[in-house]
Image (cartoon, rainbow, N blue to C red):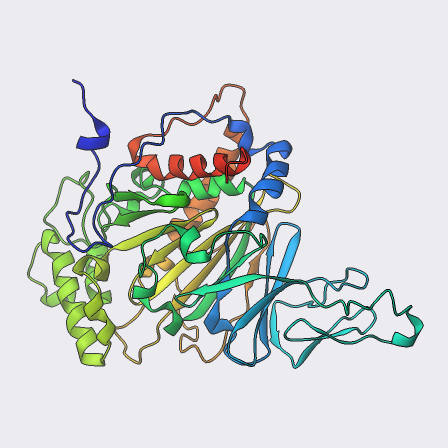
Amino acid sequence: MSVNYKVEWPMNLKALDPLEAKQPDVDDGLDVVDPARYYSREFMAQEWQKLWPKVWLLAGVASDIPEDGDYFTFAVGPEEFVLVRQADGGVKAFYNVCPHRGNRVVLNERGSVPRFTCAFHGWQFGCNGKLERITDQETFDPKLIAHRPGMTEVRCESLGGILFINMDPKAKPLQQSLGLPEGYIERYQIDKMNVVHHVRTTWKANWKTGVDAFYETYHLPWVHPQTQTVMEDFSQYDLYPNGASRMIVPLCVKSHRVADQEGVDPYLSFMLKEGGIDPATFKGSAREVRAAIQKSKRARAQRIGLTHYQNFTDGQLTDSWATGLFPNVQMGMHPEGVFIMRFLPHPTDPETFYYDTMILYRYVDDPDYTVPAWMGLPAGIDVTGETRPAVVHVPPGEKPNLGDVLDQDSELLPVQQQGLRSRAFKGPLWSEQEQRVRHFHKELDRYIQGLK
């Protein structure tokens, strides 16, 4: 039987809200890409030349640097940047390089200073990047330093509390480049959230192998079978311009693959409790859990004064809007918090990447209020936002302890990376459940081919 999968298969939540509604189909073709892109040093070199210097990169969140002189560093491949809060409240970003001899000016991940001092020869720079002092300036020929060499600025823009940098002075503005509808990110008020957990792990796979794995729910029944009673793996996939995409993953429901659609199992009971409902008093079936949690969360928000909940659809109160920002970010977006994951390439090895995750939480002094459990927020940590936790660095080969689901992914990806090198593998065959992956690679190819 012939089926038009682009029309008849895709799951559609039939939402009326324009930000939640199913987006029109995008024809990205049926090309089978050369698998060498996942391990070739030549392809990696093309990415360094044609991709990374030209795109907006998520560098961090504004709440990490609230005061004048607060800064953090952000690295991608061989480049590192420092983002610093200015006296006027804005944020500037600079290459973390001293113009004198190329030393790193900032040597730690974050801090607060009145000025930056290079540890090599004591040159000093204001938080605005301007040169303030040259040690023994009289020993330099005035012609050599007449241009007053300061730290080199890089473009920096903010959207909804998230900070981005771009090395290309000719790149289009951030909002225009992201490809997401206006107000999409801002609705979540991330500017009122704080990082409460930050982990950086090293995975033995290509950064694109990481992106691909997290851009679909096709693998859930096989890699994460425990999710089947709390999550529908037929997600609504939406494609946007410039490589951006989304999947709305319905939570607090059972997968269509589960035979028993009525019984409330321990996993759904946990979600009920997380949503402010006592499982012992819940009399409904599994089919009624999602709506009950949505109603409970609205009532809770009204009780504790979270008026912005009125801007969310019912679906947003339970479901995960897994939103992809080209080229290397996915954000699991919820009213209570946002899970940011970045896939950062290794500087020299195409088969290693850094999986960088941040849990952002909007603190509420209420015992029932927390981020969704799938984020893997450890028990007993400070979630008030009063202190910014240090980055937890997990060495290669060690279990990341990111929660059951993400730990399973960390075990899978190195194995897949090995298979990508096989002479038997001719390239990925993407289904419509993997349309976000195809969309991502289509945009990547535009950069590699010099079309962007």
